[in-house]
Length: 449
Image (cartoon, rainbow, N blue to C red):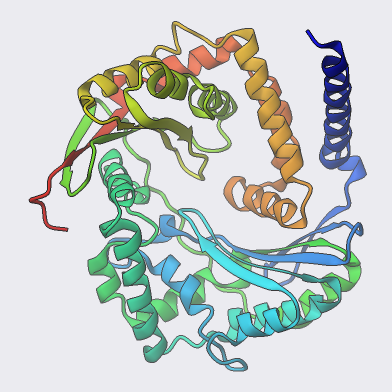
């Protein structure tokens, strides 16, 4: 060993570990954080996290609405609103919101998922009042008109064509959800079914907005260089007059226990076969979820993971392979996939993929695998929390998905408490053939798109 290289490398590693530990102590210790909660009389929740290290802020509005709140006939309406929210209000014209933010040196965007819809800005801290005023304006006075619905309906339909209908990966993922769920609204994709996008009415949009975009169904998250007392006064000034509405109906549907493997063969134009499978797993707050996340890391994260190393490097069965455990409000799926190499049979790939995943029960992680996974997860979590946007995202995500942002501070401890025995236990519990839905892509040039 070259000691001239090894010693500096060791010093660097020690410094990095010290930085990581110091960051963890500062970011995850509630006594050292300036996170405060407020709530207006109309039910709007406010989470603030002061950080004066740079003269910038992130402003995020988290609406407790996503495709989980839809029903057959209006699937895709949550995502449709993500588009409509940029089409103007009483005070501003179409796309003016984005243009004004950019003109003031900021950036804004939005995203919709199964469980939430979020609008966010990153901007200089002296523009905080501008952002608050503009977000409150479009929340209260959105221009939900026949003209805007017509134009954005076509935009979303085109997005569906691009992301699902004309995408092998989008199509197979949609087929997995549609077949893995019998009852729960996770069965449809966020973009919605095309027939529903064609039929959503203006009245349905106006009613959906009234209920789901009410202040009592939202959380404002502000992180960065500001004074909390001043920020809360500004939020009260611009949001205070928006009326509270009745609470949205709760999602009461519980997905029935799966009693046997579901298997679907998807014929479509493609170059090579692939497989996508889903195992039912519990929701984000379940006791088993931390162990499932560690299992996911060991099985499928990176080129040294069990699935990738075995299927891609060693046996060369697959061009790509992996998986991930979803974390959601309601029980979701652990995803596993493999795209076959040229000349390789999908049946052979399927056997190897499932042997690796389901074999975790009898072949639990080694001490090295376990510690590596937990260290990676802790490091990623801590370093992601270095930016205002990611701090805001974690506050909003934990508040919206789990109902309590404090879980953000306990996540690393949950990872580190996972044992090899617990990983084997959850693998035996969830990674079983009877709990599995398998979609096999069959390349077929004769199939119409």
